[in-house]
Length: 125
Length: 461
Image (cartoon, rainbow over all chains, first blue to last red; front, top):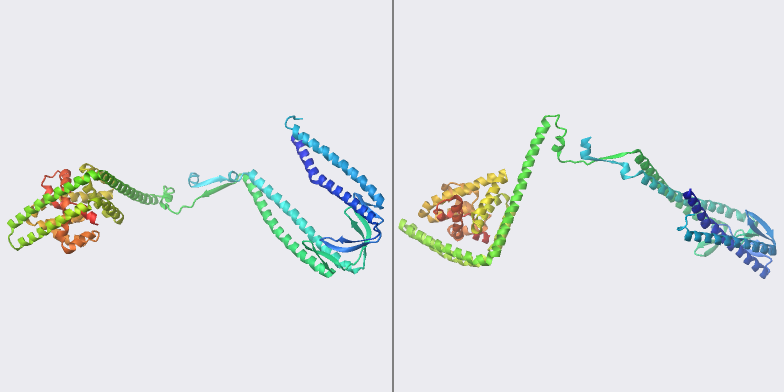
C-alpha cells in the first residue's frame, strides 16, 4: 500500500516537473510577450501591419494586416475571443494574476516537497 | 550418461543466461526500440509536414492573396491576408534567408524531404535490428525459463586408442590391440622421462663437481699439479725402463726407431708439462663447454662418454664410491640404458683384461700398446669390445673420427705422438678406477689402455 502511494507520488511529481512547470513558464512568457506587443502597438499607434508568416519549416510569406484594432486572443481550449486592445490588456492582466497563483501553488508544493525531504527520514507518517 | 559427464559439459541455459536477466535485457532493448520508434514518428511527422508544405507553397501563387488569421505572438491573431504570394523567404541555415519563388522553394523543400526520407530509412533498419535483438532476448528468456540445457563436448583428435578402449570391452580385438599400443607408448614415454631425468642428474652432478673443484681450486690446483708432476715423473721412469728393455729386447733396426720415438715422446712430454701448467686454469671451463656440446650433439654417445668422463672425474675427486652409485642408477633406469650399460661394463672388464694382456704385450711393443690405449681412450663400447687382434685396425679408425678433431689432427702427423701427449694423465685415473672397482691387483696401474678420455684431450677440443 505504501509502495503504491509512493509510486503515485512519484508519477505526480514527474508530471508536475515535466509538463506543468514548463507549461506554466510558457504561458507566463506568452502573456507577458503579448502584453508587451500590444503596448508597443498602442505606443506606436499602429493602424496597419505588415509581417512575415511562418508557413512551417522556416518558410515565410508576407502577410498584410489591414486593421489592427481587433485582436483575437487565445483563451484556452482552442477558443479565441475578439478583443480590442484595452480589453485584451485587461484579460492579459487577469490571466497573469491567475498564473501567479499557480506559481504560488507550486511554491507551496515545493515547500511541501522540501518539508518531506527534511522530515521524511525521521517520521514515518 | 557417465561418458557424457566425463567428456562434455552440460550447462543449463538458465545458469549462463538467467531468465530474469534475459528478460531485463529484452525489456531494455524494447525500451530503446520504443525510443527509436518515437524518433521515427517524429521524422515521419516532419516528412508529412514537408509534403503538405510543398503542396501549400505550390498552391499559394494560384491566388493573389489569401485571407488568413495572422499570428501575433503565440496566443493572439489578427485577421489579415497573405500578400506577395509568389515570394517566399526560406531559411538556408545559420540564420541566412533567401528569397525564392514558389518553384524554387518547392525544389528546396523536396531536397529536404529526400534527406528526411533517407534518415527515416536508416532508422527503420536500426529498428529492425533492435527488433531481432529483442526477439532473441525474448526467446532466450523463454528458453531459460523452460530449462533448456547446453551440451558441450570438445572434439579430441588424438588419443584414438583411448577413445577406442572404452567402447572396446564388448569387442575383443580392438582393446587388446589398443592396450598393447598404449603400453608400448607408455613404456617408451617412461623410458624417455627416465633418460631425461638421468641426464639432468648427470648434469647436476657435473656442475656440483665443478663447483666443488672451483671452491677448492686454489687449494687443489697446486695439489693436482703436483700430482701430475709426480705422474709424469713416474711415466718418465717407465719410459726409460721401456727404453732399456727395448734396447735389450731387439737390437735391430727397430731399436733406433724406438729410441727416436721415445726421444720424441720425451720432448712431447716436456712440452705437455708446460702445457699442463698453462692450461690447468682453463681446464674447468673448457671441460664444461665441451661436455655441454657433446651432450647436445649426440644423445647416444652421451651415455658412454659421460659415464667415462664421470668415471674419470669422480675417480679423481670423489673416488669410486660415487662412481658406483650412478652405475646402479643407470641399471635401474631403463632397459635401453641397461643394454647400453652392459657394453660399458663389458668395457671395463675388457679394459681390465686388456690391461692384463697389454701388460705382457707392452714390453714387446710399447708403442702399439699405447696406440691401443689411445683407441680405448676414445672408448666407445663397441670399439672397446673389439678383440685384441683388431687393435691395429682400430687405430686408423680412431684417427678418422671426426668428433675428436684434435686427435685427428694429431694423428695426421704422428699417431704415436698424438696419443703420448694425452695419455699421461689417464694412467693414474684408470689405475684407481680399475683397482678399486674390480679389485684387480696393482698390476692394473701399468695398463695404460684403460684410460677412457684424457682431460687434456677434452681441454683441447
